[in-house]
Length: 350
Image (cartoon, rainbow, N blue to C red; front, side):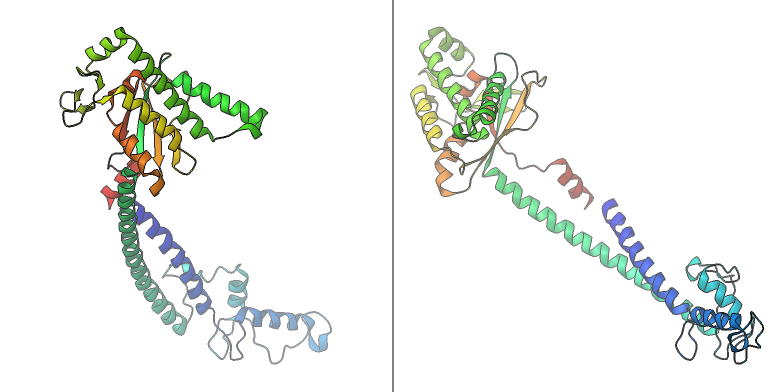
């Protein structure tokens, strides 16, 4: 799994750097009084520069001090090497993290300690990688389980409205409603009585009400709707379902057609029921513009799961496949139980 391996490498790299720093501090020897050799040698060099009694330069005998190139009684570095190592300018000794086994030995005790440290570090690195891989696997399973639950919840609160683009469709009307709301917000914000989502959804319902009323009063329009299969013999609006095999809409015989009067009453009731708490979201999934080139523009409708929103959800769900929406060039569909591309990719790689 690419994501797991990447995170494992990053985590293991950070752990390795911390362990190397710890091993490096262990490999720097100490004298009998607990001072670091580099600091001790710096003090020795400073004392020698003063000479005997603190007078002159390099003239004192340096009694009681270690001579350059001679090992300390406790088995530490020679002073010249320790000075170069502590300041980072020495070339005799390689850094402990270089991994050069042919370099000059740091002493029997330090060599054994370094070898054990590297072995422990390698074992800890393997254990850390296994631990991280296990945690990432469990985390992936948890995320996918939560995404599955969210997918189920979306089916109980999410609908999609597909609006056909074009000059005679609803896209220009929706854009005008949005522009009018924005203009009112800039000029007289105190006059705003609803949010943008409510303003646009109200405009959609008003347009549907007017279109159905006009169609009902026009015999030629009713005959044309009947020829398209939208109306039955009783002038009621049918429910249409998509047939993937035939790639066309077919009449759903299991649902009763709805008369125009009942649809007009439903639209009126929905307009009264929607508010800021019930209608959680009504927004185009792409930038809305009259010059859009896509054939269909998809709007997302999110309804609250509260008890007050239950009648609104019931009515909107009954409009799925309702042929009367085709008079506006629209159709409504429920959210499908599918995962998005990101979730699907994670699911396939898990």
